[in-house]
View: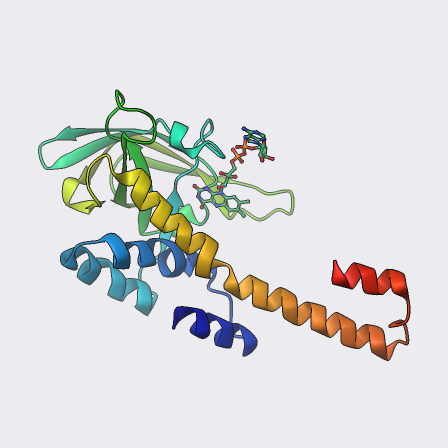
Length: 214
Ligand SMILES: Cc1cc2nc3c(=O)[nH]c(=O)nc-3n(C[C@H](O)[C@H](O)[C@H](O)COP(=O)(O)OP(=O)(O)OC[C@H]3O[C@@H](n4cnc5c(N)ncnc54)[C@H](O)[C@@H]3O)c2cc1C
């Protein structure tokens, strides 16, 4: 149903989800699949209404492609985790209300086994967001520094140290429905290009046809 919805809205030229990307296409589906009934009731309706923006706190300066090398540490203190570390490339962090955050809860375990998936409120004390400017001049990315940030244990999605499995659920949505809009848009642009090429009488140009095909 989600796939059909995304295809149809893209075909109709609906606006891009923008800062709603992580909530609608990443964290939201993960909470729907892995969260408790309370977590789903708390977080999903404001995402669908567009009331709360989420960002993604996965990448770190030394944990990009090798995401499981992440070092942001969360230690238990009563009903909270106390989180310290840093994240990078956090899109739309400056406007986010929540962050889907990967933390290391067991530094002794093999690297894929000691990770947990938390929902961090972005107004918690100890969070510093520093925007990163792209070459084009926009600042949609940010660095995020976490200094003893308290996140309730109740905000953990999935079991403690089972965060890598939950992350694979999140990334399955990224590889699944998250970019369907772009794929549909690319196909539309390609079709429009082909129409233009025909109109301009260049359709018989084998070099152009090869480029459009590629
Ligand atoms: C538009 C955009 C938005 C993003 N938004 C977010 C976000 O909101 N939150 C977030 O957490 N992250 C975000 N990211 C970050 C993205 O997930 C990381 O860029 C990604 O994990 C790659 O990490 P890196 O940039 O550190 O590159 P690296 O891991 O350093 O890789 C650099 C290059 O080396 C290659 N390479 C790496 N390891 C190997 C290897 N073992 N063998 C051979 N080649 C290798 C890679 O293929 C790549 O070409 C975003 C990225 C983009 C482009």
